[in-house]
Image 1 (cartoon, protein in one colour):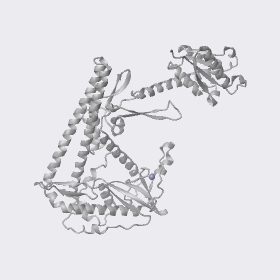
Image 2: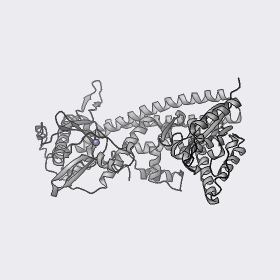
Image 3: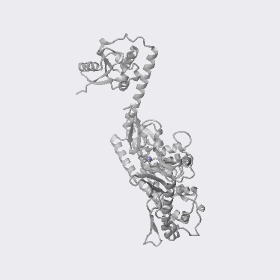
Image 4: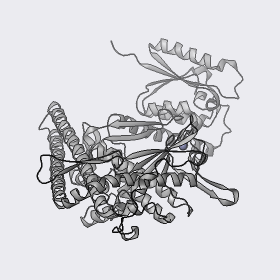
Length: 589
Ligand SMILES: [Zn+2]
């Protein structure tokens, strides 16, 4: 059976109409009557309320939708009770009528009611500006609707292509595809940053290799950060749809495995580092307080915001606090406001002391273990180093190998597409090819993820050994009196961040101190059947917890550190270099 045509019924009531014969209900029922006469289905377009009563057509939201649909060719039959439903200005309504003719839309009215005479006083100026603005809006809406539906089908959302991609028309759809020469560099950029290279050094490297950014001649820190933060590189694309429901803009997501360039593990690690760096930098550029140890290190467990510190001796104020509320105050958008249940602040002096003592205790214990194995390990350090070095070289070789495979797959992807576009293969063969390549790429990304984790763990172990080598004496001086600057430096060396929670039952803050290395309860064991005195490090946990009471809380195990005092042959702290300073710090310059 042939699908029935639809009669689109547009109705409205303007404020200065007294007669009841123009009521919305009457308009609809005579429209429906017309649709029955014509043997059509109908669709109702009801311009109620304010927008309907306005004589400015650019205010009319429903008419805007209707005309957009009309221009897309989806409206063929339109019914209005009389032409003044479109506009009481005869010139505007005749202009709209002309538009209908251009799109071959048939217009039906109850002709007897048309009244052209009543609005002759309208100025020409109003007419031109009104009709122009209206069609500018129709045009804009039409193009946005096109973009949204294009995106939903997997097309590119428009704008400059991100580095690593270009666009090609496949099956009539303008799609994003991987640009192999660039995608190799995207992986390199992530790898460099992940290994501690600063953003500026990455820029230099790109420039030196003649790689061109999307805009401008040279790379800037900003353009590298844009790449490091774009989750299109793990196959996620998004755009904002504020057309389908203008009052509720909606984020659309499109997931396309084929567009993945970087493995998830590396991507997530990079995101965490960037977040931490940005938050810390924001905090550190604020006014400096000289006697505060943990500025930029405390984060709220409840809402994730960074803690701020308030020091006002005149008011006897001296505390760390969750900044969510003062940040919220500035945010206009309700949905961006952070809800946080932690309302109690932390006394700076108590907290600083507790964290410092916990760290000294922890390092002392880790050190004791190392003292007992020092002889063993350091004597064979040379052998161990070579061993590890070889392992890392081997893993990195594998990584390069996988990188090449990925590059190869991306090239095959392009070939497959080209064959299809020139007609060498059909759609089925093309899809099969795509599937095969996607599967192999997924396998390679998994492999890459495992390698990335392995390299990370050996790097950690190496840092552990160099700690043992360079810092063995260093710890012995830790419970002497240090200046706040020295303490800050030491804390920076070991502590990644501290999350603060509040335990309502005991009315105390709970701090979770995250360390850069897993040295809480770390152990090592000798491998028995090995003549070369090989050993294995059993990584401990990388965080420890401590409580901060409202009143000053004493430390439990102070005696541990006492055992470590003495040892005259060990150099004092200021002669030792802080070797881990490069770890996760100062990446963003
Ligand atoms: Zn909070």
